[in-house]
Length: 503
Image (cartoon, rainbow, N blue to C red; front, side, top):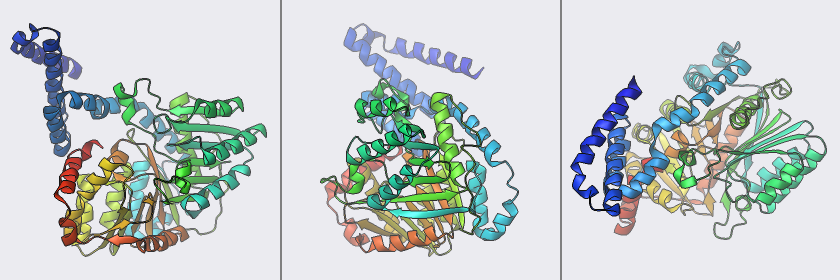
């Protein structure tokens, strides 16, 4: 019924507009094209208005469509169609939810015990995360923070070489460079030894990955799958929804997740970027099962092959006390903006401090307000960002938020050595998030992400120590000085800010 009404409305509006533009239609091909673009823009504006989006998004789209009709029309086809997102990923959402509830259990028999370990204050946060993300908190998982590329890839390659049963990899960016070649050689060697290797890469993030690289993997018997391939990238809506996850699972017992893709720049070998500051996490134990589930469901979505069996989902559990660990997957397939809402709850639960590190800081209004309210309430709120861009429009959009943050009492620091790519949130020195999600709208609403949430673990303590160490290599912004920046920069930032809901 709803579709019928929409069609009738569309035909009615189209008929009225065609009659109104009758004279222009008679002026030839250019006139016809002009009218069709105008009709498309008007109709898209009408659809956006009826979708009841957030007012900021609605106004932004209408401004873009009105100011730049052709460009706005193309942008809308790529980035703007909410109904397409819902239709594309609705099946994945229900399949993933059912798999998580089946494997992890809808009702955790130890939930009350775990809540007592956490206390009422933080326990509610993890119950929210479990409800939104369908995954329980584990107190039987050991974690280790890996600092920068050298330590991260050293541990990854060491554990890959120890694999006996299977290796699962899922990455946004994989490059055919020195470190990419080293990883490929290890995977081929393990496949030749009889280890089952499955390799997934994002089709857009890894668009430069050579066919020779992929063929070498396939020829060795490694199952290789691109996530979200698009034949016409700039005319296909799938182009906008990318798999930003970085996951490795080895034998179901060892897991890796964090900010580092596979490429030489993450080892500081790119002369244009220089030193690359990043953070990764290694896990052993119960929570690896959740990381495995995330990979297996992504694999199932792309291949229709399911591997929800005990040989993949029975990690060795260390029953020592390690603190709480919870793996949460977020993405456009989810009913809620899972990671964003958990971040919002984390910030709102703070009693003493909120420390954030993000290379791309473009918060939506909810997160932006939560950060300012926390600072105005006397909470020690700190934001660490890069002082040099790798994506200029995002960099300038980020800086447009700084004056309001500084006025609210947020301490903003710019990291001055190389490029800061860590994605960290630390609350009260005892609760932390580390993973693939940036503090931006793309990570909250468009990308497939995965984050580990840690409660009173040794890794949490290390993240606190490393954050303080990073501040030693950063400069704190002063409101008065920042407000005196060149007018050209302020105009550039304001323009980028206008586009922030679309970035």
